[in-house]
Length: 432
Image (tube, rainbow, N blue to C red; front, side, top):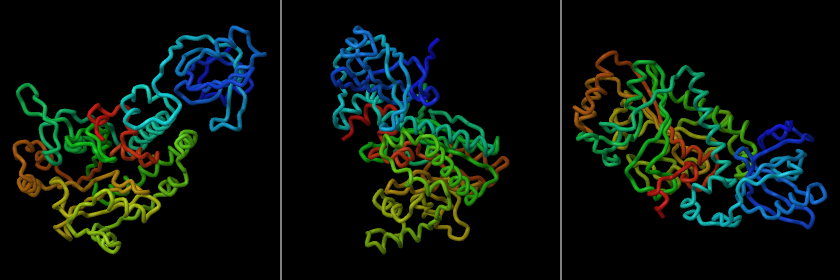
């Protein structure tokens, strides 16, 4: 019996007859030969129909196939050194399942807005396919890494009562006559998990009530946020470095084909796998920008051009450490050597991609945190449960958050973060 296989498994069946279920992405004919460009969700490759090797009915059917037709094929796998994939199939039989015309995404250039409006279909194309395969590798690498490091997955709620960061960026929800908000971050709840289980990570959707006009921002995106009890900031930076190096190495090892589809030079990513990230004090970053003639003063937050300039000085990610307290959230621990700074760090991706991680040592003292909450203008009652984490068995602890889509955009070398998320919401597709 002929085995049913996926395109990605072709290398295991060279010179063997196999069956596949496929879709047509493109077609061309050269007299007695028809070349079918095929996909099945695992890879793309070419099927060849030769008139002399098939029945007249099969050959005529192949001539009528339209873009995104679905059908079963039978044939023999051969090596094809000319293609990125490396294999093709000589088709001997095919059976059509669906063959409609009018598929809106042709094999030509389309504008970004058009493609995002047709995202439900654009996902089938080569570039989104490659991005989503790499995204999947990065997701699995994340789970594998933290499991090996002794973390457990901890799920934070999507509805939240209090804000980890600025209250102006919250989506308000009427929650059975109570005020609630869509989650900005799983961090505060993650800290509760860390006090119970030692080391946890959350991984899920988060929301920002801000316009997504820039190439780096989304109203909805995914965050990966570890929280670690009994851990100071320098130890947290060590974990962040090992994690990022491991994740990028997994992409290089498992997604060579997809990186080729995207035209991504793997050598640009390789230094990251070596670790050894620079830890650049905020003060030194300010001086770097000033020496470059940029209008930047101490106490300013970095904009995208500033982060881009800093990142271009390195061939791998760089930590910027110890920001002024005035530009970071209330929950961070102040630097004992300089109370104007928090013990915090952002990871800046190379090649101009800017911030992808942000983290800090958390303030562990009940009274100090209480004063920082009040100084931030927040309602103390909303954070009483958070203060309880310090009141009952509080310990030094640290954590960080990774913007998943931002990191994917850098790894895949994308022009816009919207390409890195499977379904940007309608409000994002409508933004210029």
